[in-house]
Length: 200
Image 1 (spheres, helix red, strand yellow):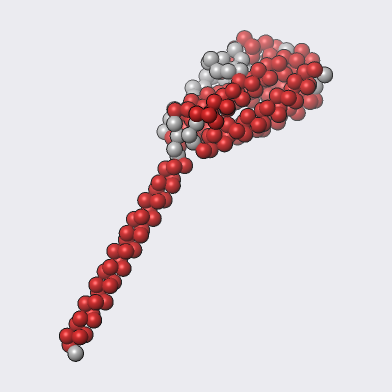
Image 2: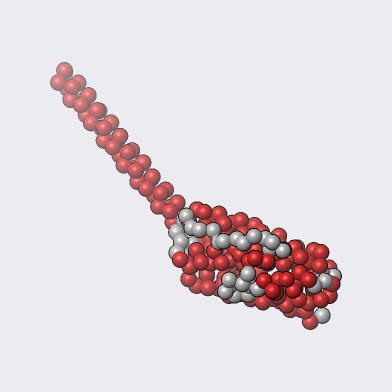
């Protein structure tokens, strides 16, 4: 009886030990899966970084132009469109800045805002206005501003759409590609609206 009891006790201990090992293995596997899942969300390539670092100042210049419209524009349509552009692009700037921080990448250089934020400059990016362009826009008032704003913002949007298409083709990060699709869709619609406004 003693031997039988001892044998049973050993069997129970062995079974518990195996169960413990199994749980440990499961935990390790589960942990590694969670880790790989998290890292996949942070997956990015050079195209993602370039898109994000370029689109931030591109958006920032659009926001500066949109803010001018509040005090310089005559057309209520232009003012409404400008407010819509600012409301859409400000949160996107914050989102993209957060990505760069999460990826351990540099934030784009921001010049002193100076006169209406003109230190952004063209920086060779598609659709960006030069400092002279921005000064001319800031000097315009009323219908002259409306015409200049629409003409410049059309060019600005065309540049952003070009950048967004490149990101969709070359980017790796799912969130960045999704934002590029949104930018293309939003700004294509605004582009058509501005061209109609310019004709009227």
